[in-house]
Length: 465
Ligand code: PFF
Image (cartoon, rainbow, N blue to C red; front, top):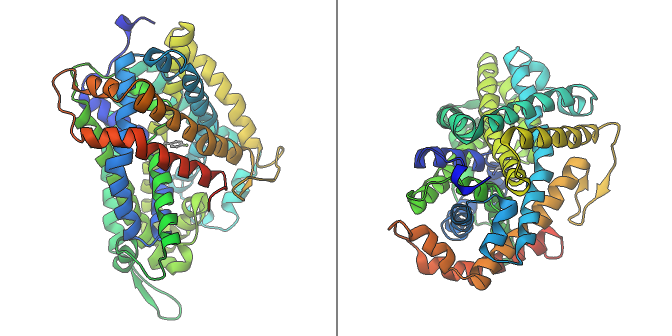
């Protein structure tokens, strides 16, 4: 596809909502609140915000500017910046290819829970065995995965404006309203246990936002910092090609800095509100014990119990909650699929519909294997970080813990040293826009970001604790 015919977002609002749609995903909803509660509440929040305006800002700016400058997909962009760096493009195309099948399988789980709450099955969904019963089945996880994947692919077929942009323009504002409404509702909750203990949503909010420094040591502070850094890396959708693809659709006269600030604010705000929504609800009904649930079990086991304990209104809140998670997940999976489809379009000079069909078939095959990983293809593999893994976790581990840090470190070396930070600064300022935090950017991309990324990488490999 020539530069001349390349699709474009209609303006900065379309771009901001699409990129925010990519960033706001499952990570904001189950990962952020859980890490914040585990890591002394406010301390995690403060560190997260500091990292977002320094480290996050650097990575976000770099990838979006590479996209806009080269007008290329992730696979083909890096060689356009500098010959010999094309291998980074290959990695950043493999990352979304590994993530898409399992992200869509989890999207299928969300769809299943939405359907359960919609059809009045809330009580069943709160049973201990419901989640494992569902994912170890052979048929239904595949059915829901396929529906979710087709929803994603439908947007990609329709292209940048009619698909990605218009879906984000509708879903993102609705998502923001739903999160806000459920968060306010959560704060009004009060629950009395059988033994007469009363817990309120506001007490839960305190645990979430007030820094708890009791027992913090330098070592544990470092742990919180690594968690905040890892979460930000995951949450902003960097190092997986997406922002290069979306950046390549941004108009040359757009003010990039302003858009980047908005994307960061949106992503952080939704993550924070997800915490206000989840932590007070889980705390009032299950106390601090309930908050120990992490990852999928927080969303698919603990929360359905909370909704069921709320009585009649719980079915409505549960239904709205899973609708909201579904919107967050689908706008993210759309962006993951677009990173791959745009790469195939640019590399092999394919039309959008052909590239989409190829990626659809690929994702169907791998996604079915991911679903079967919980029954026919079940195994237990111990990962270097000590976790027990099935197919889904293996794909997640290799992409998030190995390939993404390599792409990010490589990008810092390419821009910080080989091509020079001026490449990015010139791109951002070429239409007269200001590059705020310019000095900070240079120091970050050359020195601090690579060091932070190496720490993350070693930690993820289990070499550094
Ligand atoms: N940033 C999105 C989220 O927070 O869920 C999307 C995403 C991030 C998808 C990381 C997959 C992933 F490994």
